[in-house]
Length: 447
Image (cartoon, rainbow, N blue to C red; front, side, top):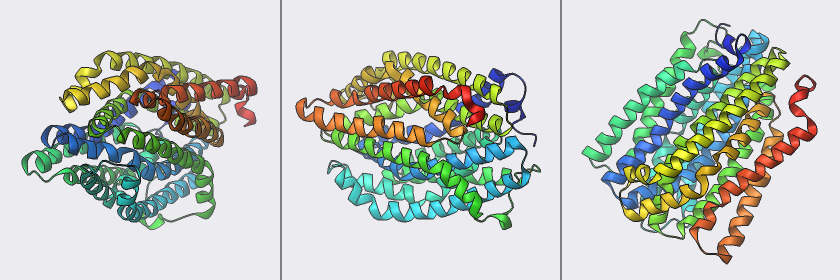
């Protein structure tokens, strides 16, 4: 087991950073999938088409988030078996994870194709946007197997400490996505659905490359097609750890759909402007998500190897770096938002809505970073229930209650924007109290 040894030995900060940098670059290219769609659609097809792509984002994450959460659980199980040097357990975990991905992709295709129109109508999607939103959503979910399997197999490589090959594959697929978007939308004028088709094809390219890597490797996690099946005991482990993360993703996505539904009431320009900001925010969140993902793998491998003190030191380092980086990025977004938003759509009203949202949220990214890192640490330790409940309370119940009450009293879109920093702050306070009271990091070996 040669991959991932840098997370188990040597300098802690070098191990985490060298693992996080390819993750950051990989997620940067992955973020380009959606950003390129919006850039090209916004510039070639106009504000209505851009709003159609934007209005589908929360709903897509709701559908995909649950299964991606289960995949996170699989990554934790794989990293622990890898850290413990259990070759047989590692093989079963890898092949069970792939079998789960294939089943999940088929289920998502059926659900997405059938429920798309009904859900988009319930969200109050503007009538001028609805046909394009349905087209984008249905094409995207027709290729569910491609993006689910890509995420599954990339997660396997990252769980064993290989964050470089997923980066290479993402660079290739991002280039494919850009070329196809320009061809389908810019040259051939196929419309919004073709932007989703370009994304699906490019993700299929990534999935095939990852699968090829897993089949060619000579390490113990090598994939054999004949071994892909569900191992009952292993599936139970993956679901036990991944289910809280999946539920957490779905719950947060549901809350975000409520937010999107309220934004839809302010018209097409508001939908387009907030959609532009969400694309920019996706890039801004990359340092946060990458450190959280790195910590999950680092903690999982080191606890599997019973290196408790090393796990503690890595946790503190990851939290500190993520919080500082997130705040620096937030300051940059705060001041640069007019120029960043104009790259997607130059209409003054669209840029103004994006700027208003950024000026409310960007300076509070530090709280989001703290919450994500603590959640990542606990998932790595196999304790994903606490983050689920914390985020259920703060990012769902409190966020929805706040919006439903305050928007009726103050019908201003800026009230909606404040829902995010307020609930990030609340979750950070709850996590901090939990850690100080329970002294959770000091008792890794007991957990």
